[in-house]
Every structure is written in C-alpha cells, then in structure tokens.
Image 1: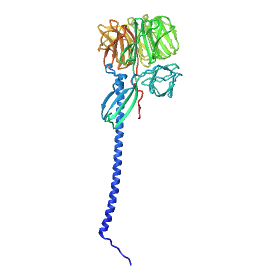
Image 2: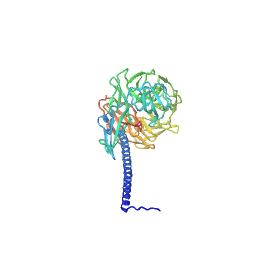
Image 3: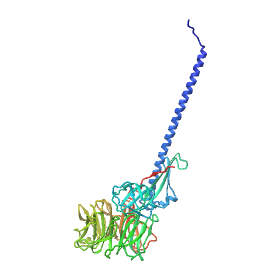
Length: 532
C-alpha cells in the first residue's frame, strides 16, 4: 500500500524563494560580468581610439614642422635650431602636438663609398665611415637621394633607393656621401599633452636646403657665398683665401658633399662637404665660363676658343672638338651621354652637342638664327634632353624641340624686353625662367608657361642686372646679380612673387652663378615611433 506525503504550502514557497534568490544571484553575477566585460571593452576601444588620434596628431606635427622648415615664403620659415629652443606647438581636433629638434642640423664631415654601388643595391651602402651621420635618415650620393633605417660603423643599412623623385643610379667607389638634415621629435596627446589619455611620440629627419653663389674677386679672395649653412635663413660669406685668386664665373653643385666652381684660370675650386680647395686642373690657362656636373666622376667645363675640359673623378683632361672657334659660355648635360654647349660664334651660329661616352663626343651643330641673337650666354635642357632653351644677347631665344633648334622671339609671344639675358632654368617643359640685364628701371625676369614667355611684374627691388638663376622646385627659386654700388643682390621666388632678400656683411661683388642643393618635394625620410 502506497503512502503519500503532503508538504505544507508554506514550505514549498520557501523552497521556491531560495531557488529564486540563487537565480537572481547567478543572473546578477552574469550581468555584472557582462557589464564589466562591456565596460572594459569600451575602455579599451576608447583608449585605442585615443592612441590612434595621438598618432595622427604626432604625424600632423611632423608635417607642419617640415612645411615650416621649407616654407616657400622665406620670412615665414622656421629653423632647425629654433625648434630646439621653442617647440612648434598646436591644438588640433581632439588634442595637441609639440615638435622639437635635436638641436643643430646634422652635416657631418663627408664620408665616401668604399666600393662601387650598383643601381639595384638595396641592402646596405658600404662607406669608409658613418661617424657623425644621423642614426637614420637620408644621404645624397651624386644627384640620388637614398633613405636608410640604421647604420653600422661602415655602412648605411635597410636603404630605399632613388627617393624624392630621383633615380637609383650606379656610383663609383670614392663618391662623396652628403647629409644635411634636421632631426625632429613630435609628441601627440589626447586631450592634451599635460595629462594625456592617449600619447604617441614620433621621430623623423627632414632634408634641408643649401645654396652656393660665386662672383667677382672679393678683395684678394675667391668670392663664395653660402645660404642656410652654417647659419640658417642667412647668406654667409665663405670667401676663400688660397692660391691665385680670380673672378669665378660658374658653379655646379652635385650634392651636399661635392661641387665645382670655375673662373678665369685653370685653377678650379672643389667642395668636399666641409671646405673648398684649389685644384690645378692641368688644362689650358684660359677663362672658363661654364661648368656642369652629372656625378662625382662626370663634369664638363667650357671656355674661350672652344676649350672643353672633362673630369673623370680623378683628373681633368682637355677635349678639342672640330668646328668653329667659338668662345663657349655655358654647358649643360641632361645625362651622362647628352650635353649642349653654347657661346658667341655668329658666322654661322654654332652650338656643340655631346653624345655617347662618357666622355661624350662633341659635334658642331649650325643653328639657323639671326646673327643679332648671339652670344648665347646660357643653355638648359629638361629631363630627357628633348626640350632645351638657350638665351643670350636679345629676346631671340633658341628652342630645341623635335631634334632641332629653332628661334623663339620673346617679344612676339608675350611681354618681354629686347634686352640681354644671362641665365635660363626650367623646372619642366611648361615652367622656365630667364633673367637678364635691366629693363629700363625694372628687373628683367621672364617666365615660360609652355606656350609663351611673359615678363614678370612683381619687380623686386633694388633694380639690378641679374646674372644667374636656379630653382629647387616650382615654388623655390633664387636669382642673383649686383646692385649699382657693387653690392650682391639675391632675389627669391616663392611661387607667387619675386622678392628681394636683404643681405648684410657680404663683400661688394657681383654674383655671377648660383647652384642649389635641395630636396625636391618629399624631404621626409620616413618617421619612426619611440616606445618608452
């Protein structure tokens, strides 16, 4: 017989209450755990987001600082030394950044390649020594810019070749290795740098600009003037007291560590990155009016009575081309196998074309131009050597296109004076400048836009004869000459107008030639992050 037991209802309710309480505790625990996980995830997401914002702020700081170091308008530029004493700070969006430099720019005593370098070498660059060079950054060998991530005692490592629009090229053993850069550190913080919730620190190396100009004798010295080094944003007198001093007529800078200047003798000046020295060329003792270099082992000079000299990296040698006895005034080589030289020959007008080699073989080319156009004082070719300009005594310019020289009368294509032009430079086939002697009371500067030449009307003062022009890019050009009293004059183009840059403390001599060493458009060598 089965027995049945009955529990009181109150006991059942007590049991259910216990079960419910346990369930509430479990659900509460799960809820708390879920809430904690959600909160932690939210905090992690917020922290990650703030860290990313801080990274972008630090990057913005580097970009801002780079722009201010190479600002087209010189008056608005800041200096590398200035960043060390006063940080570049700014509030942007959710936070702020602050940029400082390591102090003075880095320009070490130049080292040289300890072995030849091929165009496709990307592992490391062998050099005699890396002493004094930044631990990471950019070097310049001939006209090639090369980024590197680290150094050892005798090599630059993890390299990127042909940066900033340059082309990876072969370089001979002994080629100088130049560097001139500002080392920056940028801090980004959210919501600020004083009590940041997110903070990042980046370093980068910014390549700087330097310019050299030469001129007539400074008392008993070679006249050399230097821009932006060793004092930034200033022209510094670097005249040389050595050897038999002469008037200097032309300069060609290959890199921060290599360049040549020539003048009224067979003694040339050579720059090694630290100092100029006099080099006895062994060539004919004549007036050399033009020099151009494509590499440390590839330079040409031209002078009176068809004199041409070639530098192979070790010695100068004389070349005597056939053709009319022209006093050659200017030479330009678009590549190692394509050069033009122009001068004063008028019966008939004769240019010289160098091809092949190196060294190139020079051939006389008769140019069908008006006799009144000679002498031609300057020649320049755009990349590829298929588009060249030569300027001279009048506004009849010689233009090389489609494999032949033709004439372009400036006055027929725009507003330009019929005056003597002394120098021409092109940033591209549609962006060329030519400068010359005074147009009445105004400075004579004309511009080519790809279709016509026109007179620039920004008219910087004082009004002077301009002898030379060179550009770093389309928004950064220098022209130089001399005022009536003999003082050197430097005019600068910032992409909008030409302005006169006042100089002080320089000798009263006429500037005859100018040459720029500068980054093209991408001066940064690639940032790296600092972790505590």
